[in-house]
Length: 165
Length: 378
Image (cartoon, rainbow over all chains, first blue to last red; front, side, top):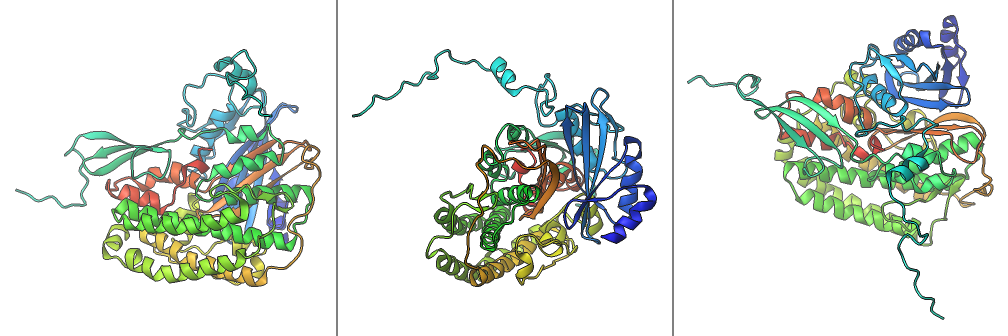
């Protein structure tokens, strides 16, 4: 554990331990590619996932790159925050080709643009024209009320059975 | 007339046509589709087309209470739902600093191992079904039902159990359940030689599965392939051993490695791990301590998980199943990301692996990779 901490020091990265095998580092947007490729040379060869969190109060998106090292039995979580009004990120496809599908999913659900990713076409959804659905300002209730018809009466057309005494 | 060698590409000989392998096709493993560009009998290009099963779970979870989500998440992986519940509960407990009693941890291990065995039986049946050996699905699904019977007795549900709870499990083990489990393990041990004779030593299955979809170790690591598929390529990595959770460090079991990296190695890997699961369960029956099965958590309407983020993971029958849980200290989760083990292999690696594969090998590849569409199309 300390070994990794020492190795990440020259990069100017602060390691925060989340659990016994898991640590996170926060990096600025322009250093993500550098940090990820450095971690890859250090044994974090498996790309586990790319997730996104919409911090709407801070007006920021947070991208979470999760890497795993089989040699050191460690999990590295690299976090980067990007502004919400300019959601553009560099594609990490040159480091892991696998990022292609994850970035495509994030693009669809959060509307983040990945520069360098050739295929950001719709993936899971069909004919989606609304706000990207996993953003916090997407109102699911308003969307379903607009899309589906609701019956006026509260019983939804089902008559209550007679009460048996 | 000049004879054409079989393995030469059929380019320019046949016209390319599009073949849709979708939910109505017997070769696919769920509600998911591949669009294959075919040249004769060979695959020239693959386009995975998910979305048929998309239910928006990640969004739904943000609107529900921490404990309400437990009814939702088992649906993310149908053949093996318990990994979801355990991974989610482990994450919540880590963030909320809840210590789970030993007995509950043993019960969780037993539930996980039983679910793993059930999922492996599904995989054996899948290989049999995709190669035309229909006895195998009948046997395997029939035997899986005995596991479901035990689950029904323990939890009240056959497929979805909704049995885990932050702080432990909902109910204690009923009287006589452990004896019945022991009998079931005896039965499975007596069945395994028959499975071997029917499936694993079957020369036709061996000819059909050996050498199909070869996956070298470096490529598996590079493409995020985990679990039995990774171990079948010769990488000794199992979360249960390397980063033990629950009580796996108190149990004695091996990680078998096949190492050939082809479809047959992948299914044989599952067969070997099946035996290890029996071994783990036998130890659990012996070692399970007395004590409470759950610690009390606050009223669910007041249950606030302290702000923070944590990635909790479980070794499932298909690979690493992880939950990235973000809390902002509210009664509802702020964001939950589900990492399904089939994501990388089903949506990305398939595009590389299936190229130049013959059409009859495609279902064999899908079923030996044990691709489970609900876990990426969540």
